[in-house]
Image 1 (cartoon, rainbow, N blue to C red):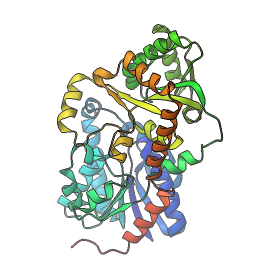
Image 2 (cartoon, helix red, strand yellow; image 1 turned 45 degrees about the vertical axis):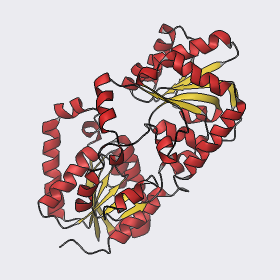
Image 3 (cartoon, rainbow, N blue to C red; image 1 turned 180 degrees about the vertical axis):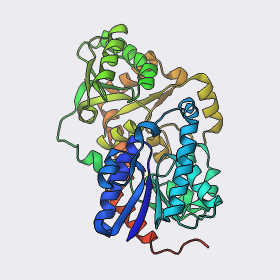
Length: 378
């Protein structure tokens, strides 16, 4: 019997964890696995003994974490005790670095000799590269989803596997054969309320400015749910652009039909690259957060596509440049040049191709299976 303990604390981690468990069952045999840990409803569907803590664990921002410090401290203590008691063959940490990296360090400080694997490598290369050496001391396997990460982690002596990005499989399933509409402009401000409030007003202004001279343009946006879609409609009307078409739950379809777009920095920019959607990137945070970020950031670009390419592929309109006129100018440049859009589409698809050919979860499961045969720490 192989014993596994998995920990994920976010919606995306729950999705990745459930697919990883499905792959592990196929490779090791469901009847030969004993699975415990912390995750969400999707992981629990694969492993009934696993605890669903997602409603409490999936918090955003330093202030929210501090408000729940006592809760997280208690869960940390409980989890450490459970792992030390059960002695799983492998403890698998899935993303969620604020909790998981502290857990790994605490386990080693307490003399834990078991195998610890990390799936969905934390992006410490962007902010805290110094933590990689510490991770090499606490982890036995890092499974990374971006190709350039492998050399960074492996240089520290940490056993590392590039497994590919899970998005590849998810997006391939949503790909459709459809013609792009050159006069359809996408406005994608992100999936969180905070991002929408910070970024969508400038997108609305850009749409109003473009529409004033181009009556044939159409503008679309999509939210993750109906409540946020209603807020997008309110902001569009307040900004003098009621013609913006608002929907929810269909952003991937829109990414395949729009001629160009403006997109908030984040996973959506990778999704757009996969679909070959020409876009410009934008983002804006509080001035103090931005000031700190400029000091600690250890990468040249905010956008992951630009970091993957090692150069500026898409224009980044950040902070004081995240304005309606600036967004309108960037979109206008794309609208005015079919050749520029075609060239950018090719570049984006080339970058997306570096994310692997698919099968990330199965590849990660094979890496964990291989780790099972490695000796425990002395």
